[in-house]
Picture 1 (cartoon, helix red, strand yellow):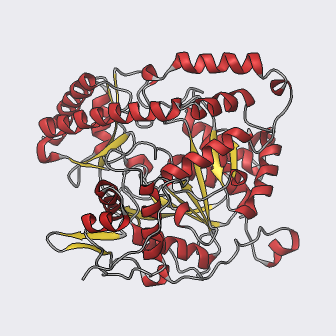
Picture 2 (spheres, rainbow, N blue to C red):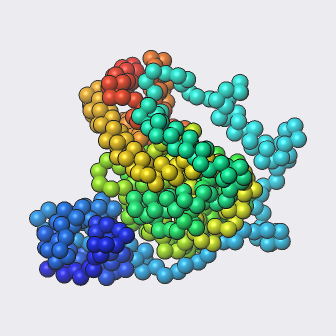
Picture 3 (cartoon, rainbow, N blue to C red):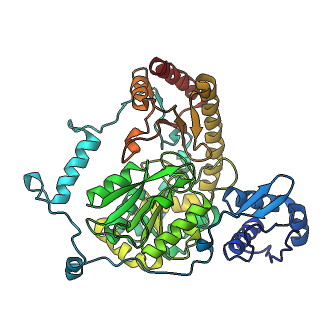
Length: 517
């Protein structure tokens, strides 16, 4: 028998009825007011009880099913999921982060930095690492090591369509700010960021990603990379243990290694990071920081399942570790609303949420943000001030107006439709030209998908062969910290129109046949 639900909804509330119902049901499940296996009322019945549209109830049920809170059983109804771990539902510990070791504390805690000689030509140890990073990224001849150069069919991920950006609107807003805000542009601003932009970011994330924060917890940074860099320096000492998805974001791995951290790869599967592969929270080598991309794992596109999200949060709380949630392309999801952030589930204060506007707008706009646990706000703002005083005021003002006047939301709606059509064209072309030889993955969100190849295929060789005929398609191999386990190719589709996508896949298939037979 279905449970009768008494859920007060406020038609005049700040949140929509759909958001209110979603939040109440999710919270009741996590608090065990709705128990695993319990049957919910049919959507029509609940809609009648609450005097709301049945469509609203259906959308909420679908969202909770997609996120793993509910299970839909054909012919039986909708039930609270049995897969949510009990320890995550009843967890009450709220430990603080392990404090940063300094001076005598660091000496008593044991060695944190392996003994190294100073780098070449008078460089510090860190400077020597920077020389290594430069050689890795820019190559020995001083040019950026773009594996392909300018190729006509460029499937590299993370590149939005600049041609469709509303440049006239952006230019008009910029001119207005320069004309009307001359006094603000004549002096330094708040190192935490332009207040109206911080408020707009907090509101946008709360409505679209379930992030729970105030504007005071939002700090504007020069791209998500700076946000992650400052968090690492703020919360870790050289030699500390960290964990990164494998395969994972190379920029995070380079940053951690450049600061002298020990980086442990944690395998990823179709449910995202394998939390069970982390050391026990009280183990000597348990990481103090875990860097994750839970909503659209980079590069595989997997979504971190709800049970694993809850286990990871509980693990971090018991360890006193920091989780850095990199939500790099969450604005683009092609079925249902974007999945709730990991930060939105965090009741322990262990998640720092990092994002930017590079994918949604254009990459050279170096405006990102970090949503911080309250205890980290003041030291983070101080670190930001020491790093570069502030992010450019004019960019922040223009972006704030762009969001506040509704241009950002309209742009996102347009780009979701455009990118979904391009994604569909890519999936169709892969079926046509590869058939069963490839398996697409991670295609439900973001700006790229992965074409998984048969075991034993040399993806790097296919990538190199494709480049010779004008197709830039990165292999997954460089994103593995350890040995590459599953061969695949990354296919970004946002910057190519549908005709070029189809032609590019045809060329890619021709290159692959030369090597795969």
